[in-house]
Length: 149
Image (cartoon, rainbow, N blue to C red):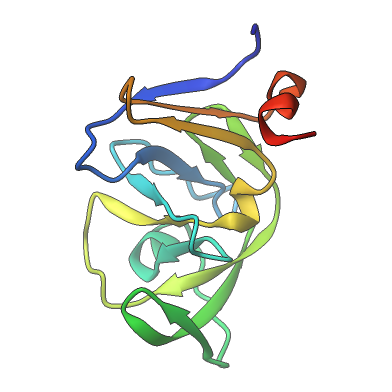
């Protein structure tokens, strides 16, 4: 198989973390480049970022409605924010979208989660045997026979 992708090493006891950068709310605000990471969360319908990360990128208009969602930690209330886009792992670009706002996280290296709103647009494979994670935007017809297609 030859295609552009991201292959990442991981330890079986660790979460999968990838670099992320947000498109700033204004051209006057430079995106923060550094070691900020997100966690892949296949249980999350919508991607979410910390309020602090959003504010640093010029966002401050958060919905006043609090959407209640079931999380691994029980029902939680979230506000939403429309962002101009993001770049995942330095190579996968996504345009305008609405994300949930994670409040009371404070300053962390992990600044959010990437949910199925983004992951459903990609192919991702996790191999515990090889301790590798593959993420690609390419369609992989070679996989169809494995899944009965």
